Length: 403
Image (tube, rainbow, N blue to C red; front, side, top):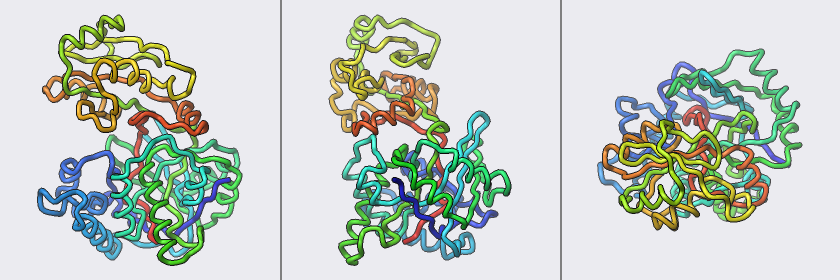
């Protein structure tokens, strides 16, 4: 059963939330971070993307990057912008757009639950990214950004969330990119939530596999250094937002290919009976739409090679039937001929990337469902890389966990 851990969060004072809140580190690159942080000295990007404050050309994994991040965090928390709660609290975090809303519990999860598969994964982590996040956490003595988890909701947990959100105004309300409204409530009466989640058998990683793994590695290292027992120290817990799975919104994770010859495209179109279309997005599972030389095409993916849940995913069917046999892409994680575009950027971004000459071909995907993610996780399987894009994204800098 799941363990949650109320904590004394560091939050910006409400009037400063707009100054500090920023997008997560892993949805932008260094250049994009620098542009977003320009003229914003208090943006939390200076903590999670500290290379933007160092000379151009500084290696991303240089010691100076981690030291700068720790320095920037210390300066922010030592300023008048932030204050720490004096009691262990549970936070409610809501994201609302014009046509979507999701409300979850912002708390800490247990490294033990991650290590013991109470928190289930669906994605393979990369050692270099693990190393990077682990160093950031250790150098800052903080988990600066939360992980997005999902769970099968209960009437009990829903009741406790609504009892707070329907009777009190939010502590913080911030309008982010794309008009997403982010709201935070707080309570130091935490026992109902702790008991409620103690009845939840499994939690599922939605977004943030590397942060989970890095939190586990940090706890293992500090346990060895301090002689502490598992579960007794604050570094044994890492911040998460737990959203009910029926509220989760997954967008497609699209693909772009750098080099495709006319001959290869003709073979693709003929083999899969591709049809020209005015539609830029597939209308159902099992189909993809392809953009090549200013035209959109639709094609049906071959049936899965077997009944394994992973084989039935569109991203797996695409990989097995097109990317590897036709484009020679055996490992999409490392092959330089492929790149990935989150669905929030839309099909217009796919057209722009191809029309600009940066890529020859774009593939518009049908989104993976939350039910598919849960089934893959429950069976102990792993999804192909870049299978899901959760939207909206949790803002960074609004609640920080220090250990």
